[in-house]
Structure formats: structure tokens, C-alpha cells
Image (cartoon, rainbow, N blue to C red; front, side, top):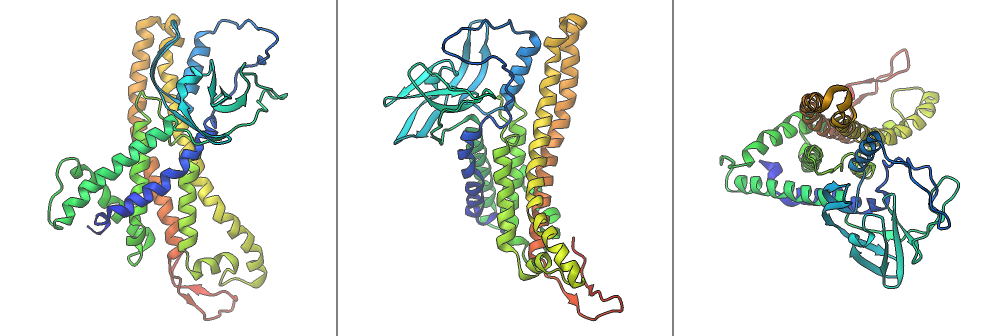
Length: 395
């Protein structure tokens, strides 16, 4: 198979798709909803009201959706213990600063590195003093400066792990076909082959065309399997939510956008800036609309994936929360049974959604690329209505 002869093409696409997410450590709280209303001051100590079960569940849901500098498997809130491991923090602040996130003690302590002090607050790292003071504005947002942050967050680790997994899976399948087209895949490669053929024959070829689909198939395969694998990984109890992170979906949509624009032919640009077959006044009106459409397409890709995955995770966490929120009304056993049944049902739906969202992102990416590289043959005979007829309809 052509698409598996060059695994380096797939590796290149993976590196392009994963590298920008490292920068997303500076936006790890893109989903964070600040629920605290008390202000942090160094002069007075406020007594916090005891947390209700609803508050605890909501905090856990937000923690699952957010990125983190710790890879926490589970926590014992009664003793204040967290079981997991910290991740490396990489900052540029008057030089390179590399240290373990354990110095923050889950946001409870101030980290000192080479004479400078840093505070972790709501998923962001701020410059501070030895006491860890933060200056707040009227909206309760810190005004302290933030160093350049290239840290290895939980989502970054999950993304690198998944990218490596996809690469080596394809590498094994590529080696099988390198020895001969008639060789049958072995092991896990047998599971990958039908999906690869499906992406090639049902997504790439019909949307891009016979002449040029081979050029873009490695990218489409990378996007499909990377998103699908990350969606499945997000269904585990590890608290991974890469595809529900707006930074990842932004980067994925941006690569589709740039590949589309840099691969476009003159017919594509002609349809955008000077639409053929319509009167001149309409050409002027349609040009800004078509230009706006260039950017709304990747924007819809970004929001669709982000919103669907985030909503799915929220629903699953909400159903699990029934155990804690309704144990008085249904008793502990009844609440557990209801939560378990509903969670199992919604998990099967989420597996379908994991595949469906990968399919939709890949399908729309191939459609946008196909529209950019498609050759349009126009009939230049002028009819009584002043409009040209086109031989082919745009998909």
C-alpha cells in the first residue's frame, strides 16, 4: 500500500501536529471556571465555609477537564495526599529554569529557583516574592508577570505518548507491506489495516480526487488516528482531556487551514476573489464573504471537536457524581446502581463519539483540501441570463 511505504511522512505530520501543543502550557486553564469569590490577601485570614458534596464533585469535574502539572492517579482528601508523579516545569525567565512541579506542592507552596520565586495559581505560573503574594485586579485575576512557559503538562505527556504509539503502530504495518504487497499484517496491524483502507478509499480518494489524494492521505491518516486514540485515552480514569483542550483543536485546525491554503490552485483563489460565472457587482459582494469563509471553516473544525469532547466528559463525570449527590435519596446501593448503569450506557455512546469526531474532523479536512485542489472546467458560452454554466459541481 502506497500510504504505508513512507512512515516518515506520517512521523513528520505527527511532529507538526504535536509541537505547538507544548506551548499550550501557558493556557492550561482554558476551561477553568473560577468559582472562588474570596480575595487573596496577605493581611487577613478568611474562614472558608465547609465544602458540600456538590462543591467537591464540581471541583473534581473541573480538575478532570483542566490540564495539570501533576499526573495524579487518585487523591486522599482526608489526609491531603496525592498519588501520582509531578512533571517537569520548563520556564524562560532571565535564563532557562527547569525544576519539578513538586516544588509547588499542588499550589500550596512557592517555588524558589535560582533566587526567583514562582507561584502556581489556577493552572498558571506567576512571578512572585518569597511569601508568594499575588496582586489581584477587580476581577480577581493576578496582575503579576508570567515567565515564558514550555512545561511538560499532563496533556503534553499524553499527546507525546499517543503520537509515539500511533507512529510505531504504523511503522509495524509499513514494514509488512515493504516486504511485499501480498503480505498479510500480523498482530495489532490487522486491526489498523481496515481503518487505513477506509480512510483512504472512503474519505481521501472521493473528496480529493484520484490524481492528488495520495499526497494528502498520510496527513489525513495521522489526524484520524491521533484524534481517535486521544479520544479513547480520554475515556480512561487518568483525567486526560487533550482533544477537549482548545489549544490542541486550534493547532489541528490551523494545520488543516495552512495545508489547504498552500496547496490551493488558481481556480480556488479565482473562486474566492473573483467568482466566475456571476455579474461583476456580485463578484465584489461575494469576495469578502468567500474570504471570511476561508477562516470560518477551520474555526468550525476547532469548536466542533472541542465542544463535543468537553460535553461528553462533563456528562460522564456528572453521571458518576450521582453516587455522591443522590445517596441520601436513593441510598448508597441505589445511587451506585443507577450511576453504574447510566455510566456504562453513556460510555458506549462516548466510544462511538470518539470515532465519530475523528471521522468528522478527517472528512471535513479532506473536503476542504479537495475544494482547494480541484480542477474546475468552465463552459465559457454566454447564455441569455449572462451566467456561465459549469461542467462540475463543487462538492
